[in-house]
Length: 85
Image (tube, rainbow, N blue to C red; front, side, top):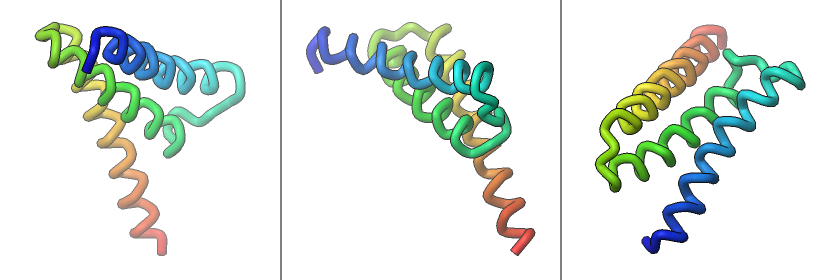
């Protein structure tokens, strides 16, 4: 991936996370709902890739944990829906 491609990918990842945050703040997107958690998971995964490529371990740790927490929340939603049916 070229530097410009990495930069676009990195900014896109940040925009995805920021979109989830803004939608939560201004549109009432439920922070425990699947759309919010999925946006956070996708954005964090994108930023984790870039951080890993550039060996930015602090940023990698932040984004990896952010993604794991979002994934944990999504899995909890799936388990609850499965138990409800």
